[in-house]
Structure formats: C-alpha cells, structure tokens
Image 1 (cartoon, rainbow, N blue to C red):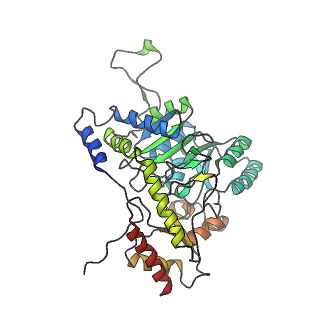
Image 2: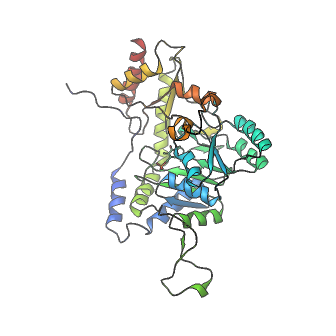
Image 3: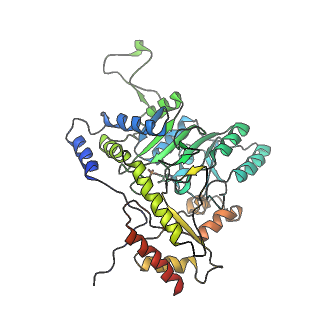
Length: 390
Ligand SMILES: *Cc1c(COP(=O)(O)O)cnc(C)c1O
C-alpha cells in the first residue's frame, strides 16, 4: 500500500493564468527593470489604499532598506516581537544598530502594547529609547496599531509593520499596508506566504521621500533623474548618491505577483473558511485556538494551537511527533528570536519573556493553505484526536 502523502503546513497555489503571465514576460523584451514591476507596485498600492509601494527581491531586503530610509544606524536600537522570523530583527543588525524584544500578548500572540509601554518608560529613564519598533502581524492577525502608534507619538520612535503574514488583512475595516499607524509596511511574497512571487517583498508608505530613498537603496544608491543638470555629462549619465544594494525584483516575479494579487481576496476567504472549520471541529479539545478580534480581519497565514502539557495527558512533543508520523506536516512558528544562538551570545533572555516562553513551549502550527481539501483537513483533525486518545 502506498503510504499517505504528507500534508504540508503551507503551500503556494498557482493557476494556469499565473503561468501564462510569467511566460508572457519570458517572451518579452524585459526580464527585469521593465514595465511589470511598476505595474505590480501600483496594483499593491491601489489594493492597500496607499500612495507608494516599492518592490524588492524579498521582505528581508525590504526591511533592510526600510530601516536605512529611517536612518537606523550604529548607536540606535530597534525593538520587535520575539515570536517572529529572524528577519524582523536582523534588519537592525545590517544597519549596525542593536535589537531588543518586547513580550507578546498571550491572546493575540502579537507584540503587547502594555509590555511596550512599560519597557519604554524604563528605557526613557535610562536614555535608551528605540529609534524603530517593528510590530509583526503574527499569523496574519493585525497588531493593536492604534495603541502602538500613540506610544510612538509619546516616545518619538518610528514604526515599520512587518506584514509578511498579513497582505489582505484588515484593521478597523482598512487594509494593512495603508500605513495609517506606521511609516512603512513590509510584505513578503515567499511561496508559503499569502501570495507569492517565488522570492519577493514590498514596502508601502505614505511618505514620498521614504519611497524615493527606498527606490534608490534597492538599486545601488543610483539616481538617473539628476536635479543638477550641470553635472550631467550626457544622456548616459547616472549618479551613485549613497551606498545601496541590488535588491530589485524581476519582471518575471512581478508578473506572478500581479496575477496572484487578482485572487488575493478569494485566497483569504478560503483560508478563513478552513480556519472556521478548524475552530468548529477542535472546539472540544483542551487547547488554545487563534484569537478572533472584532476590530481585525486576519489573513490567516498560520493556524496555531497551543497545547498545554499539564492540562493534557500528552506533551506537545509527543503530539507533534504523532502528527508528523501520521503524515501531517505540522511545524512550530517560531523559536523566540532571543533563543537563536546568534542572539543568545548576548545573554540568556528567557526569563524576561514569560508569554513568549509559554507560547513557544506549547505551540503547534496545523496545515492551512487555500488548496487544502476538506478531506485533507479532516485527516489532520482525525490524526489530532487519534494522537490524544493513544
Ligand atoms: C517570511 C518572513 C520574513 C522574510 O520574508 P522573505 O520574503 O523570505 O525575506 C520576514 N518576517 C516575517 C514575519 C516572515 O514571516
């Protein structure tokens, strides 16, 4: 008998229209720096109701140039949530700045505004206020941006939303990415995320100066429209004005993103339907399910349950192994960043982040992606009940 196929925790969905959009670019004159990247940028900006969108070759690159545009440098610090992918923190280190963490709210699993306020008050007395705070819309559920924004007004820091999980999510009926409560928002188009370009990212902003700086930084720091024409040697002229990178997205990637974007709302409806179905069918289990907030619409990037070892007969590890053995590609998102050896060199921080530690000890990510069928989802749920019974 054929062993049952493994159900992954996440997977991209590609259509024939996506494939055609990409092959059209392959047959065109431009593979990169053609018309499709600006078209994708305009489409994302229109979707998010924001003035500017700057594409990059990953969310990691977009976070880096976002920090640079906000002048993050040596002597500065950036604060973020420990329950995130390492890229949310690494962007500060690229700029020579330092990183610190703010504990999560145990219900939303997002950076906790109360913990942030307490840490800011303390930091102010020590003269160590952060320059940038990076709230992460974990699993696609928007952070309490109003509270974080009002703290930014009181304590004078800038905000970059890491919305890698959250394109298509909404807060108070408005799209994440409109930057109502932040300077810059960053999206990821990695294949496991909500929509994909293979690799890719985007930064949105209301500020034309920040947009211009990020455009320059993603392409070597080079400018072609030079204001001072007397410096211009001829029609070939361009000028490097700062030290930038090659963080450009290709037209091939942008074509895929543009095609995927047309299905974004359907993709999220599918994810939401599957999340509702998990909620219904796991209702009897003694485990914590994802929060639902009246003010927010999640993009449902991840469906994470928290498994309390003390309440239940079996441990999180036992449950995890049983599910993996049953062909369910469960995962754990995330190992708190301060636990990573690269960060732990700076000291053991585990006792400072009770909620993050408790979350990390109990979290299991169940499979959730638009093409997950009801039958596959039932297999996940059955395997979960089976694991608990045995
Ligand atoms: C995936 C992810 C990133 C990095 O995205 P890339 O596009 O792979 O660089 C950053 N932050 C979070 C929260 C992510 O999940």
